[in-house]
Length: 243
Image (cartoon, rainbow, N blue to C red):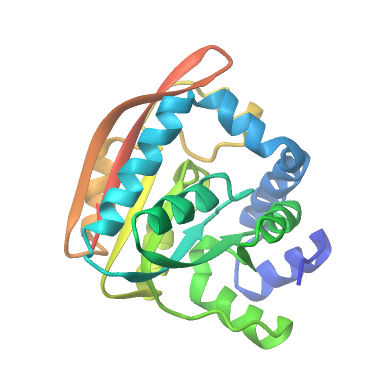
């Protein structure tokens, strides 16, 4: 179920992405392909252990607020599953039975997810529902089409159409479900568009709230007081919750 670059290109064409967007996505995929074997170590280098634990705590706290003993969780742009597996473990330690799925577009990341026992879904964040239906039809999977919780960590600034991703997430969220996004606050380090293949230089809380309010009925966003460090540059993090 893990495609090659040309298959991905054809799939993106069928989904209606224009040539410029396809080329940008392919560039991102090729970049993250090279990162995949060391992705977990790269994340650890960006974030101190206490920062990682805080991020997991923040997500788990939002899941617990649902008050459910069983949850179906989707991690969007999950990468190697660094956070995915830790969130699942923490929730199960808290007595919440967690069925976990992870969507990503990079083939090598999908392999890493599978190695960790997480069900990988190949697809694009702007078209989650279509990606799941294609995976089920063509790859013999039985991935559900609705989730109690959708999370995304350190990925939102990579999406070409972030509001489109929020609409895509809304389409696979169960009634009464919750979305938790942790990502980078707006900054001025334009070099990251080249060195890290960032599509956006983060978002301000106002931008996140404005985008979210056009899609969801409830939107919360606040700075976490945490930072990731890239090449000696500190970038602040925020948490946004949509319901």
